[in-house]
Image (cartoon, rainbow, N blue to C red; front, side, top):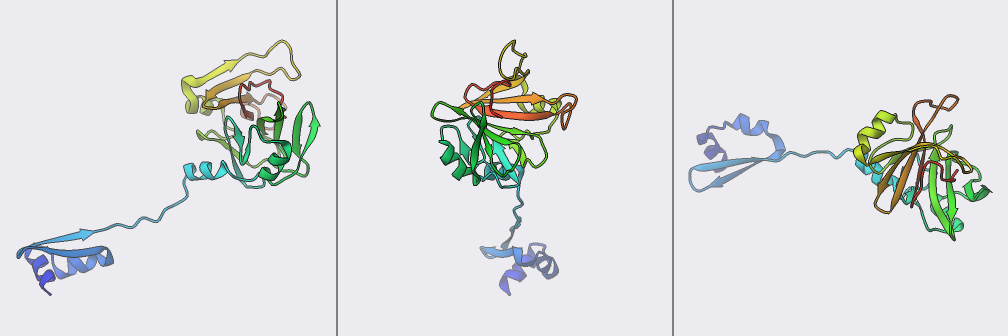
Length: 211
């Protein structure tokens, strides 16, 4: 009625208003000025950031986990092995050198003991491992170029040490609460030329025994 006529005076036909659909609201201001307010409804879609956030609290049986400087999924540094087993949703058992793995999978995930409980967490690019991504968005299995792009000047190369159980060269980035260490797969690895091992924990380096 009156609002539509006012809209017509403002240069909007009945057809133009109808074309705006249910999202249009006609508001009359004073005697001659009509404002047509159009609202847009956006359907939210899952984003990479939401998947990363969900992966921070996920059990190890999930399809995607987030690794950080103090956690892998819901397993965090400082937990006892029984607590870590509960958080992971799978039973972790010792496999030697202070490392514990899931007894029946998923494969490629592990924790290393440090002090009274979990001191580090790790993920290796092998068959059966869930999708692993860091909090900054770098995926296990990504390239060295991608790693440098994500972390830039925060990333530092660590040469292979002369001694140790598994002396390994790689890259380290220091973050709030701990480090992330990255190892590049060589010839004979599942994905040569790609990052096939990530470790998270306070002070970890590529040679840290965590798997």
